[in-house]
Image (tube, rainbow, N blue to C red; front, side, top):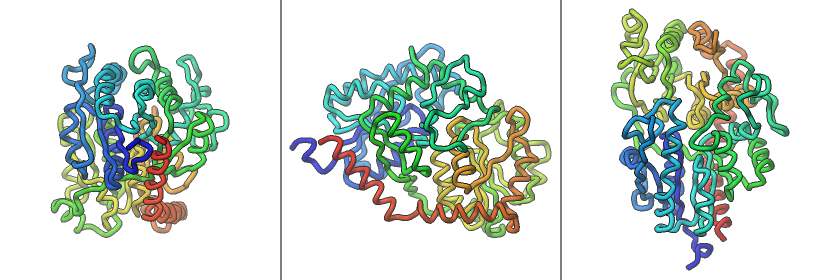
Length: 452
């Protein structure tokens, strides 16, 4: 039977070596395997055991471990972005690219119909000669990907760096002048012989198809299609199909003792490590808001524990009213708990979906470029969230955080009420199960048409 005659697909996946890429790819894998399609997932050897725990279809999802070569300047044994500080990711990209021969050998052996990738700009050139179609599948929004089309150089002024690309569909979803420095990493070398921007543009231009989740702002998908001359296909949300359905007893007990809708929940993810002064400003902002709070953070830079990072006397003052936790929490369950009334987060793409599908007020403190763009989409375009104003040098300011939380939790606040109404309408649309099924079914049809 030829590939085009088979109704079931064999899909290989090769994401960038970071858990922020592995996990969305695995969520999509679970959704495709649920429909009966075979998945071959290529990843560093050390990451396999962690992902196997959230693979729901082991009979259809097979992992292919890669040996990540050592590169001078990277700590020995490093395999993923979690293992190295951010400035060294450009060296990790060298190791990533040096797995090319292993990837090719696996693809020749398993002969999939199509391969999904993101930062592996060389995948199409490797896959096409052996009859494999390629899909650039983004783990960030089309909104953020559209920004990469504006060519940036190290010599540009702040004003030039934040200029929108010609034809970009929004005058609101953009960076501010004081955020221009964040974009200076884009023209920097990422790997050998090309910049991060070159890598992204080559990856998209060389693909057969560009894939996103269902986009919260449809015109940005249209812009990407027009700019790259490639069809764009949408998967739908493809969020975590969590095995856990109930909170651990310790969290459930604490939340049961507070007023419904009163708790402020904050999660920044394991990749965000704040300086100690910002860490303290953040928790002091929660304390001064007057609301009970549950904060999940990584210890501050230079601190081994959460306790070491907290302000003096903080734990005694907030005992019984606030929790600051170091470690994993079921982020997909907490925003839907009836005691949680506000969700403070950094607006990563997955978290953007989780907050949009919750009933919480949404307060955003973005750190990196694509998170800032996501934030502007929710705040300025869709008007379902509010962004905390930064202090001097874009530092977190406890007074601004406290003021924002108080206004969002005030039932008589007109703006908070407007955001809540808009958010409720958006959630109703996004949580439509029939719509989600329609997305993934159409996505599969697009893939089947691609290989004919």
